[in-house]
Length: 226
Image 1 (cartoon, one colour):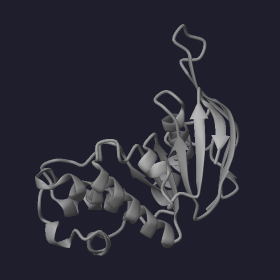
Image 2 (cartoon, one colour):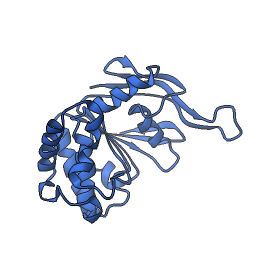
Image 3 (tube, helix red, strand yellow):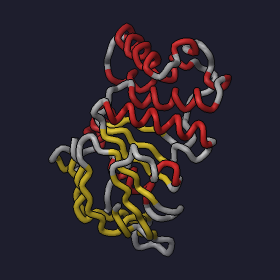
Image 4 (spheres, helix red, strand yellow):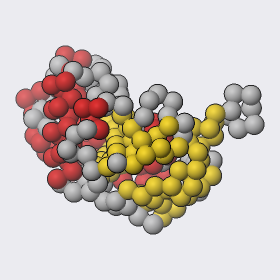
């Protein structure tokens, strides 16, 4: 699945004293099965750009094409469906729900889809096995190690079999060993044919051989592509 951005801007609080131009006229193409890093310091626009690509926010101007379809002007209901079918999200804080099990956390994205509980459980078992979490399935997530919580977050992102994985600063709170484990998982995901887009300022990630292209952002604009 190809993602194309055409002269995309994102302005917060337009016309107000606190107006912020987070993304300034970015044009970009990300191809199927590519692993791309959006690199830059805090405030560079990388998280805003990731949010736009993932249909979590709308551009102020410009076009965003997902497999040739302009999603920027679609109604919210359509955007919700595209997010659910197309993208898997891995967040910096993992956003796991405490007080429920590994299995239950992983199953959450599928509840609104209309699938039967039997099918949802079957998919959860499959993705837990791939992430080496089967033995932890009935543990509450707050009792897991940092690396195990990371794998739960990735499993949750994969359960809807998305074509594109989006990760926002996924190694920000991880040590070197766990960051390297994350990159091994990303390599496996890419090998399965999925596209991966990561926003990060971690050199361990953007210097990795897993990454096909590094797009450096500064002040909401593309500064350099490597």
